[in-house]
Length: 272
Image (cartoon, rainbow, N blue to C red; front, top):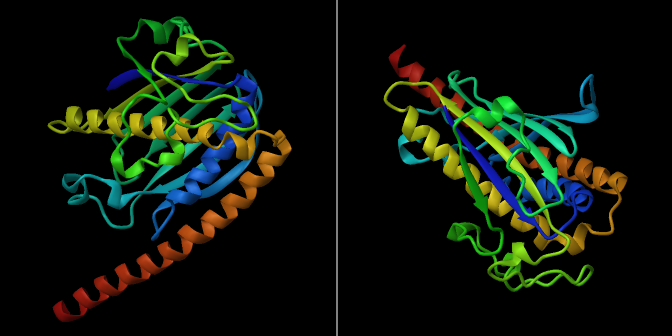
């Protein structure tokens, strides 16, 4: 098990980020879904928890075979997806990732949001605080992003929001920015397979860090697109994008499944 706590600051309030997060996730999922890979939404509905109250439950299938390193693709089938289950009781969320092909693999993410610059060292409960973990700050403006994800329009060192007047985030912006909020994420990665555990857990954390950096960058880079939306408005946008993305992913998945079955059939006939 490898546990890390990520802290990602944003030049927004917690309430503003609630809208921005929903918008970003929907748009990002649609952009990243192509050639049968991406995010298929299986379930998205209201959910009530006895402790946290009203929330939203979402289940997704994340298809990502080509995004795996070569050593992983060698042992993973082409028809491969990770199941994501999320319980959103904003400003508190829980997300879990599992894979039926790899029963000893799981990711658990506990997230809390506060209006500060990442200064709260006691945001998680006592049990979590006692666990040994590394605290990692992610700077959405100055941290280096993988080249394949870089877009000049999303470079926050040069982006200035027309609607909020916020932007042009320079080195040290977290100490002077107002408003500012922080996304605290306690991430546990487990891959209990002897000989591969350390390598896989470290790789998964690297992927998670890149995804968190990109997603939070985009949430602010797209602020002028979502800033005037209400919660009802962004939920409607979310619903429409989910439908479009599902069509995009599922059509390709059906084609991939059909091709795979044809390959299996052609292999079986000669042997028969």
